[in-house]
Image 1 (cartoon, rainbow, N blue to C red):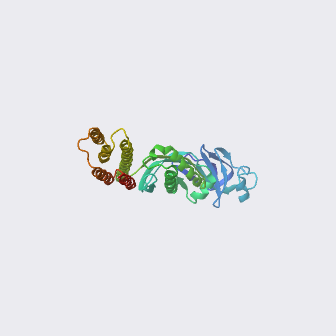
Image 2: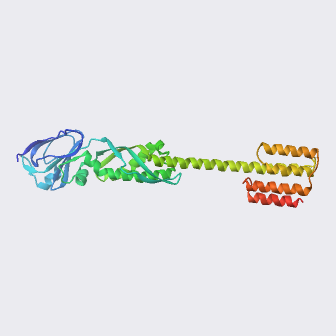
Image 3: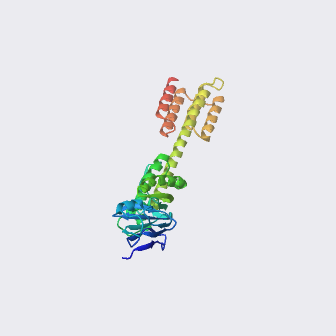
Length: 340
């Protein structure tokens, strides 16, 4: 094979990452042309040696010192020697797409509900260390393309995304229904995780973007139903607390009225019995007004024992309707019986 006097590689597209020159027969004095965003890497016996950056280089013992010592090149002349020359593309690629082929199983930390999330986006990388990259990944291949880099690293990208997404939701206490509002923060968090792994292979992860996270339609509908029921339960609970509060304040008001010496004593205690039966709403006021009116102008006052029985019956009704607790019922019952 003829000796090579000039080496150069003009890539037909940006899809290639590594290209091996077909000839290994070189000579001192030959020129190696390295374009912008390229490195030329010399290998001998499978060992990565000297690296030449962008520019035009004349092969001499001065600019390939490691190779010179390995093959004992003499000084001067056009001494032939053999070595592999690999061109490495260091151009940044930012438009690599990623997506989850299968859903990521997660537990929503807010609703404590198991979910299966899908996600997609873009990521970018470039070769940072040509020597490390060729030695770690390329091996004996003559070319290495962007697609091959993608296939090698996409599993790592998705695994890191899965781990970091789960950690982010728990640490930040964010529901899967809210996470699309925090994609920039999540993207930076995932990028931080993949950088260290990429650097082990001489690569730099320059960008990572999560464009969307979604749930299967049936799962999203189910989670929204759970959210609706939870809000409904919260509202019912708040309403019961408010109703119980009104009831207890009614007890306080009626007790004060019953002991007021200026209103009419025993017959006003009958008003208490009527009021207990309608502790909430307009009806309570209506009945209480009627009872007070009867206290002022008594027609046929009821015996005290009948009034006490009515009070106890109304108190039991409040308990049965869930408007007062058993503890409230017992306390009020004891108070009424004590007043006999």
